[in-house]
Length: 207
Image (cartoon, rainbow, N blue to C red; front, side, top):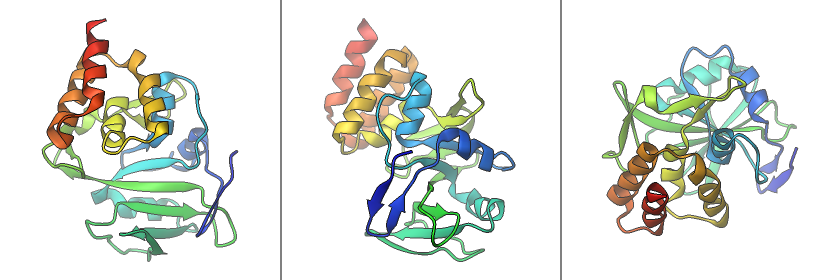
């Protein structure tokens, strides 16, 4: 388990199987997100991860508090400060990230990401024109772990790609079907305009 120190204390991120055990009783949808989602789609871990992200719909945010009532929850208020997330508090639309840990003396274990929904559609917080039916937002690994489909995760990573995002794209390209590549290229063009990834997606689609 990788330990990463931050200004707000150390991270010792849970692994996807631990998250699945913790969230097994959840009555709302959730998905492993971030780089771990790409690893689950590819079928193996290919780089280190400093944290682990779990995506929830904003409308379901209080369910996770009830699921782990003894844990500490801290909301990441823009532009980058943490504050306690009080039990029963509904976070405003501008807050998308929550850090959580088993107790005040424990390292951070999970980062919760809140995304939007409109009825049965997922709505991107980056651009509300980018949408997808909720039943096509995620997949399930052979071990039974729900994860965000790689084309959706890569859409988020495409906004300002870092070296690890480029690594994730390279690893995911071989497992993206033609429909996934078309959706990702279209979403990137709609939200971000001209982008170097779209050419790679189209090129992969012709091979």
